[in-house]
Length: 310
Image (cartoon, rainbow, N blue to C red; front, side, top):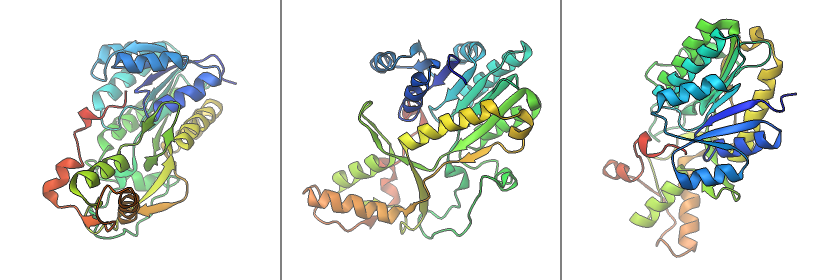
């Protein structure tokens, strides 16, 4: 169906590397934007070509986006300049009458044979944050088949500025591009081949070891849906195949796709499991979780620039 098509992945790390492996196994020709030589060696071993650079290399990203049929951005949901660079490359492809697929972490956009361009961007469910800060479980449920509810979100919600750039481009290009936004929740799991972990729970475990207790924000009552990283990678490929075989007019009806396994957890429940495991391992003196004071948030949250996934 799509064997032999060219794919450019920005940030082939925790998520993107898993997607890369699947695409290579299906016969796609894949290249990846990578910052570090050590990581580049692993990407080559997976059967892909390496493009050395960073998310700030706008001209480099535009160049490769314009050269490839499929672009997947899985580095971060919040780096607007790199998304703008990809969109510029897609615009160049459309002007030249070429097909394209773009996938962005948090938001993904793909282009099949019936459109001049397609994009997939990866966003994240932080766009749905209700400001509970752990004090309660919200009762609002969002559905990805009700795009009007997502369109009504505050423009300043997390990830939203990046998503809006893609939504605007989607409207401008119309049927010439297939653009969708993949919005995963808490991503967990371990890929033994790559030896990479998610961020959130390891950070909470390190916090517990440092401070002597497992912690949560507020009362820990806020809940999160979840998805294993390997299941998410398979979902990317399923979405890609759907975009490749679906008419642009149908894709234009809704840009948003959620991906989760039907289970949810509270952050207190997560802290309880961390506390139990570390207590049994003799790393902390009590399994009982506690509220993390705001002056220790610095041990939990870091700037996005320190967390690019490549």
